[in-house]
Length: 255
Length: 224
Image 1: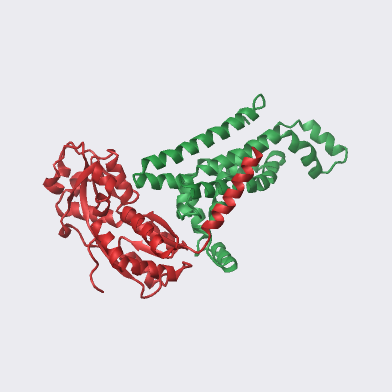
Image 2: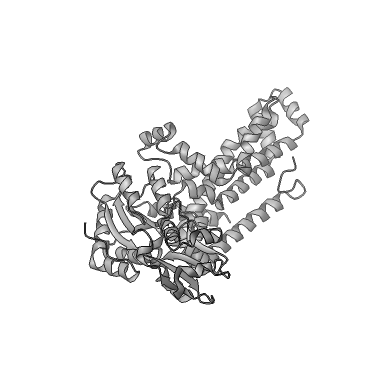
């Protein structure tokens, strides 16, 4: 027992010690959940650097960074957050990079009888009891979902059926698990293999909601600005762009 | 399974229990033996984390140690980096969050010690400190271990506070419960299930230990 405890203690010390080596810490919006796991693995192979990836809602990261969270890079689903950080002097000025335009989709599971080709009107159907979206308070994809529903005037009718995920990945998980009948999620999540296997989607027209302009910045509070620059140029490079495209991200407009 | 998250969680829980063993003893001693009329005010403050929503506690801690508070500024001036979203910040939060889980069993155990023995010791000229270490502490051993073990187990599973002040950074503040949450969002149910099972096994093991140790003395929850 004591030997196990000692072994465990050693393991803890070694484990945490290793993790403290020079690394790149990235905060990324949840719509990047699957694509960034792939990109990070690829980047680690190419560069030999270690990346610590944290996924969450853009608004939460924005608040955390203002409170001193030690991230090197911040990939927001809404470019206004990194812009504000740049203005506040919390991000390296000039490092703002619009990395993608996001799209939203209606998503439902394979066992559902809903006909998604009807578009957002399908939300009015009485069999739809719960609709999963991300929390519009702090998740840009949630705001886009609300805007799209308002655009076709179904929002007032269905707002009592909304269930809010803490971020867009959680909204996707709500509907993937069947807890919600239908969800409005990021195209990038709908294109991920576990989601593709579990259901199907319908792309919400891009003009139904304000453009989801996604932006990244290098942060002043981080410790590895060089690594952050290298990762950004990897994303901008052919390999990074190919992977982003595979997950449905439109190429960013030229600066 | 995410071994880094497991290592971080165990380190956090061990350190929290160790600190609470040191900090909790004088608090519990004072709560047991003080004759102060307004003692219940302090008792309520110590018990507050039991009923306070973890997000509320986490929010206050975040504000208190953030760069906009004097404490937070002082810390980052001295150490060179801000306290929130670091392991140290998480440790501080865990200590506050698990405080009653250590102090209450300690205090309950002290109260069980026969007061005549303590007074006999004092009247024989043994100092209060010596009386504590040679009489009260040995007689309260089961309670002391219970408090340490419960605060360890409570820290293992904390979620709301970690979410608020931790920031989910791998190798630093990503604990097991946050890792399970992440795995579910990544639709990796198998990974989440494995880690969840580990937590279940450890939690049950800890409670087995506590109940076994306190057999015939008192139930796991002090009846006080």
